[in-house]
Image (cartoon, rainbow, N blue to C red; front, side, top):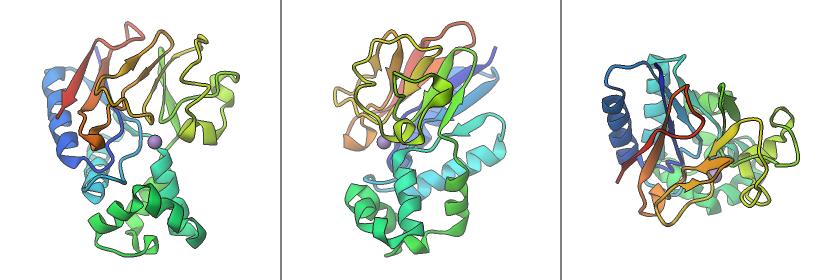
Length: 219
Ligand SMILES: [Mn+2]
């Protein structure tokens, strides 16, 4: 039975990313695997370029079983690349570290292969039990009628909502500075603040239940 490994906000924490993927592969112990990355691969942390390069390679090796969603930081980087008026906004939201990791001084100089990849990233993914998204959803709309802005950026009223959705929502975006995921009946937040000194967390799922079987962390 396939095991699904869903990984939260990386933000240039490349060392933790590599460690966690190895832990996931060991955990699968030869079972079929699928990876779902929840976005925010870049910004704030030191190794954004390496994180993107690694994910592109992993996806190229397993195109059907590596899903990389877009986060608001990928969206901001694309906006800054395409339009100078977004540059200050991106730089003040952690983009300055990303430019350093690429050894460049302008978002226009981001490598075309990475920019093209960022443009392909979807903003949500779903399977039989779960809806995966970077930030969350608008609780007042069905899952199929969400606004892109909410999928990338929402916090409230989503985080406080007790609404039962048609699928269990798995997301990141709002760092849990306790270092522990936020497990709720209707959703799971696995952003455990890897870039703020917390672990990088993977939630492990199968096709039997909605909720995680267990969690893996890399420090
Ligand atoms: Mn985010």
